Image (tube, rainbow, N blue to C red; front, side):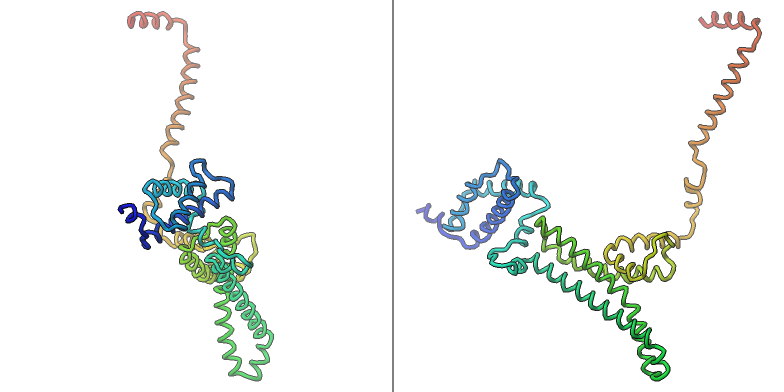
Length: 312
């Protein structure tokens, strides 16, 4: 009777432990595919637990649960940075066509980055076309349609200001696409990092415009590399570290000199140099004294011997 009670199905217990068992199976199968399955893990034991838990919907023993926990810890260290969550996000259950792989969490993220990249690219093309049309027809519009020319001038100024931001968004989306390629290949895409990826896209958009504003205001020193503002905006969106390094340089340049900076070790002679000079002088004096001792008269020799005898 007690055995029948133990074998009764607990849906909540089955759901939680079933998911944990599936994660362990994902890690184990991925380790087998890579040819790096640890010796402490036996697939026959995992399949036996799968048959008990998933197929028969019975409880697992405490020893089986402890073995699953051990397998999870070993496989987690063995397959890092791939995790059970990343394998689940890149897993396709019914792979009948390539479209099925795009319905996974990783596939949806890549598709969103495609949309963001092409949307930014189309916007940049339209902005550049309008700038070209305005510069080509500005004289005609100013002479024949003054009101139209004024409105077109305002729009031209707005488009010119927003163009670097769009280049930054394009650079950030390209960076995320390149990062997603590695994550898909190594199956390390973690859907918990989606807020981080979206924040990276926003930061890249803002960085692309901000770095061009710094460049236009003379915040960047001239280098041997000639680069346009559009390319600079793309680079700022692709690598936001460039903007932060430039901001640090600008802030350090604007900081007033403090007494601590004036009296810093870089602006004064290190005290360690003085002993070196003293050592040099001491060596020179020692050489001179040795020379003087060699030139002394022989009459001083007996006196030195008497002193040595008195010390003994």
